[in-house]
Image (cartoon, rainbow, N blue to C red):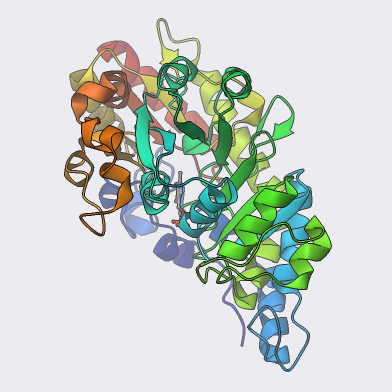
Length: 445
Ligand SMILES: *Cc1c(COP(=O)(O)O)cnc(C)c1O
């Protein structure tokens, strides 16, 4: 059994855009192949999914190892399974933390992290108003109350609004490094330490990124990652938790395995400090661990490609008079997932996107997240049971969501243009995108 080499054709078939609303105009067959080569000056632009573009013999061999040993379960089997075990150790080392835990998804990782931090009924957790569902659902599933803070021109949580939203009940903040760019961690950590608020770093969209020389996930109390296909390195589905705190680690490891703990976790974190409690099954399997072990060896290469292309495009457009790029608190730590700039208003944003797409540039609105406070199910505080604790406390009953609680976020969302960056872009593609933005932007600024 041979895994097919990635040809241009199979790359196209598998490499549809991760950006909803962009993908349609870049469907397979439209851009590559004979038709498009007629337009001699137009390169084929498809950023593709990141991790799968780096699949090679390493993933293939690791999967075969599991298959040959007939041991796809992480703890035991006819062979001696070690894929998840080694992945956890290598991932923690890569992220500069003491402990790593492989789990079944980024959402599961968030639930484990909430458990690790001891978040529960009566607690409030501050969450950015624009992020993925799981950052909201993990708070609700813990029985705690989500409180939204605005994002700013970093496209991440506004440290000032985070501080304003703190109450005596605030237990934690979820610092989401969205769309490949690190949050401004210095003011966030400063406020969190002063106010006794725990920091959970959600690195799902910024795997391998850093802030002022520190790996994302190692700065706060606990970090989480997703390995779903739209993220960076991938096994289709999968997630991880990292921390250097033995108690957080034991609680998270217990929650991911029915509330019980196996010796291998205690060998890492030391003698047990917690009794068995009701948990879940979020264990990672060996096939996933095999793919992730191989992908991890290529994470730095993926980021070198992405960063090189994103920086080339930023360099090519930063001189445009009046252009407002995404504010990057540490450009070196940004993973180069996309390039972002801000327009005067929503109308201009939409016109800019249309003009760029007419030129086959993969431009769109901010993607991959939800404006949570204005979603109907959030505004109506709907949970799995009417008596669920989150919204039945006096503060839960009193809190109001909706557009009033996130005006700055809505303004930021409405004005930013995103141009996707592919790890395999050539210099010619980068230059084509730069030229297109240089043609379009001045007519709309
Ligand atoms: C994708 C994502 C998650 C959840 O990861 P899954 O593996 O899809 O469960 C959490 N947070 C953010 C910011 C994400 O983008």
